[in-house]
Length: 411
Image (cartoon, rainbow, N blue to C red; front, side):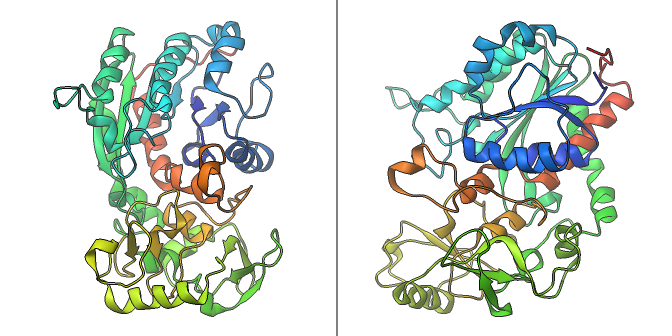
């Protein structure tokens, strides 16, 4: 097994794995329950990039982590102590402050599956990522704050022998054009976990300079070459829809995102399909562009816009970072066009490069949201690859500096 090998659990469409790939890590395999999200991951990181060496005993398809633990426990036990890193975070919907935040959400129990997986594989290091709500306890019957899941997780990892530290990080400080606060926890069997955060921040300036990026990137710098006014063409993978075509590159960020696409000006961008807005919706969005303060989440109670039926909508500011990208594409109105964002525009804001192609439905709704993971949800749930790459670089540096012992035994 190579020195910089890892396993990605709750992998989603592969944002974290893509970042680690760009940082020089090699994946052993990835665990993801959703067929749609895994299809995207497999297409980009297994079939195209050959990033995962993929253990032969595990079929290359979607899997539930509990199924893996039960069915392949013996194979996992053989990896014990021989894997450098395990990364991933359970689904965040039950913890999210932006959602309904349910203490009894069944997805919250996947943290226990995470602990069990770690206890079996015993990697030298682990990275855990989740929303801010993971650090806030659920109120108990006496209306007092309960114990945060972050503390429960930390205590259990320490019992397994890990030194653990967690911090809230604003990912917009790392070149990602989005105000996205996330809880990042690192655990190490040997070494000081605080070194990881020191390296993450101290490496940032040089990393971004090498990429040609500023620390803070605005929305227009991210998606200004994807305007609908550039023109449209029929969507290649969906009938009766129009997709946007590339305009001229206007920023170093756009240049970086288009780096591996070749000369595509005037051609359709992947997953850049425009929504079919009714005339009423177009007029509503146009009114919001004229009347609503940018980056203010406007609700019907604000009485700024008549006939606003959505619980909250935010008009983007072209000069600033976007709010947190979510699984709901109609949360935002474009900063200068009366429409919502496309999947590709959301992916840009999440720092997915344009040669990373998304698979499956574009959107879904109603009860299907509980079972389907369309492209917009895959993007919203992902760890931004540009930030994940910086995580990977800091972890590699810890190993190279001898801060963390890493097994290099071939298995």
